[in-house]
Length: 254
Image 1: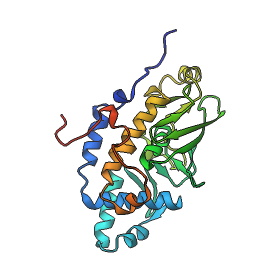
Image 2: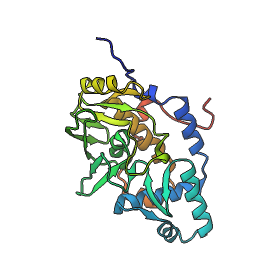
Image 3: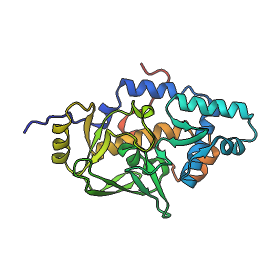
Image 4: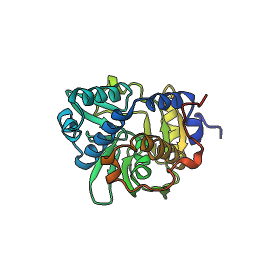
């Protein structure tokens, strides 16, 4: 039976618009990279919104004005979200409870912004992660075990990869409503049949994990490599997860 939606591989989801956005992010400079690593470290460590004062104190060898400007640069590039001088989100993590619960090996619970972000966390941290979510069609609970090199089981699960462009128009408690899990292709097809106007494409859980690993295990990891705070709490070594998918941005990319 013919699908009513497009099914894409990770490489197809990393289109030119995606590449252009990441090339732009690579130009942010050294201090914003260090600030981003500090923010991610705090958000992962505490699970709470990160105040500007906390970031400034952690980077006390830098002028406050420079640190604050770096924070606003990251916000402008949609790498973090600042509300009332508090950083409430730094991809892939959000301080607000979401539909994408992450169970870390040490028992901590954190929250991801969307399905793809959740799938990329294991590659980013170099640690196994359990994801608890729901099927966006039937609302039945889903649990996925993801290792740094990919998921273990759950291969019937599908992901709808939509757009997050409207995020800033929403409250941070309703994030990425169009990047969700479905327990099967049949459930995704039923949802899409009722919502054909929602832009995006479908991906298997394997391809969605490859996309998350390329974003967070490679692109974002490379971006914050100069942050000693972030490097100290991750267990990643060797080639970046996701590198096997041939996505390697450089300034010279066409």
